[in-house]
Length: 319
Image 1 (cartoon, helix red, strand yellow):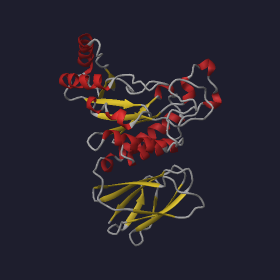
Image 2 (cartoon, rainbow, N blue to C red; image 1 turned 90 degrees about the vertical axis):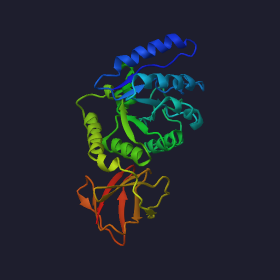
Image 3 (tube, helix red, strand yellow; image 1 turned 135 degrees about the vertical axis):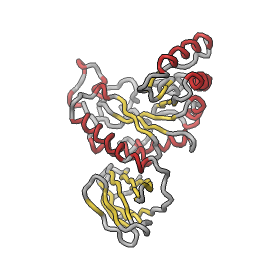
Image 4 (tube, rainbow, N blue to C red; image 1 turned 90 degrees about the horizontal axis):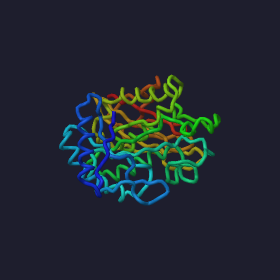
């Protein structure tokens, strides 16, 4: 559970401090407590540049929360908007910096809260699901090297947020398993240290969509060993092969060493198929592709493989 406890009202500091204290004391000893959140998306106000909650209020509330619940982690989730410098002002009030981004969108959905006039939640030029990696990089810049970054990923269909009487069945689009898997691993490859999901209360359970989310989470959890290691000191070079189109993001890579094996997490951030040679594996002799029931030949310290659009391959090298 992450519990929302509110923050200080700078116009009524005493009353709001008392309310904040009561809320923290209510949840601090609960066995299911994972994170304490002050306010969601505090820097963002829909269709306005004014912050929902001033950073100063959250900075002043932070030590109050930590005094009452010293073992709890304070978590602040930001919308996929605002300047890096604006979001950095909130770092004094949190332990964990987060961002929610929900890019699986059928297009043509009705203008509604949380969406821009173009129908998208995010505001970057990249409107594909690979914007998850872009926003992860942005939040790494916000957090700096010393704070963890969590990415909040999509577990709902946008059309499901609309009242049922106005809902159009043809616009109900949940993330597929391949999309969920890509967004999860792209976030991790680009520097996320935790993943969360929002919106599964709008997802039928049981359903294929729910199974797809669970499969993704299970795969990530099974790889917790290598994922929680420090980045391996290996220099990997990427050479893309000509496939008849441009390379934009291309193959993104993260390497981790765990239990005498080298795990290389890769994803194709492009909307087109990609073929690439990865080199720098001179001390490694064998390579299997995790969860794909296949191996790749290591020749002269390099492997060559093909990625579908928005695809993930995880390689396990052994000596």
